[in-house]
Amino acid sequence: MSVDIPVIILAGGLGTRLAEETETKPKPMVRIGSKPILWHLMGIYASQGFKTFLIATGYKHEIIDTWIHKNNAEGSWGFECDVQSVFTGTNTQTSGRIRKVIDIHSARRFMLTYGDGLANVDLNLLLNFHLNHGKIATVTSVRPPARFGHIESSNGLVTHFGEKNQVNVGWINGGFFVIESQIVEYLTNDEIPFEQDPMSQLVAKGQLMTSQHQGFWQPMDTLREKMLLTSMASTESPPWKI
Image (cartoon, rainbow, N blue to C red; front, side, top):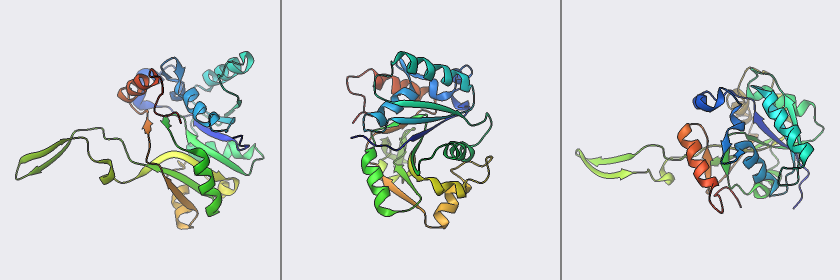
């Protein structure tokens, strides 16, 4: 399926919790196997028909710029795509990055995601859900991955030790959005993260819907998670591929 909706990928943050890797490169350029996580993320979209990418850069943007130029020149992406980087400021928050990309593009609707997490989200199902409800924004909600040993006990006796049942831990922002261009009305302060006041305002106005994703989802916030994704990338069919 070919879908003429551009994909904004937020790729400008510092990635401080991965300092071992991000001292020399922006977080989306951290390699998962032989390719940056940004490439894997683009592959998720491209495989489902979304092939126009607007990479919102900031911290060490020149590294992403060089990478994009090289792959465009060599035609070495490995999938059909049209990729453009948009420098959105070194210290700009996510609200400003989104607004600055929308301001220079004529599209009325965008896919939107962060440059540091992978999932097997059905993007066309997400888009259809968004189109059917007619609101300004849709966010994918996911179950958070268990990071610690979960303990259940009775009178001091441990009755269960292991991962918490994900059904019992609620839903969080999974980072795969569909947004209408009029969302810029909520993005009036470049110094405020999109996830704070703008999303709260969308909720207050009844303009934010969510699509629950029950499948694979994994962020890359720590070195441990980077190693986990790297081990998955080495398999014949990584779990983020549909």
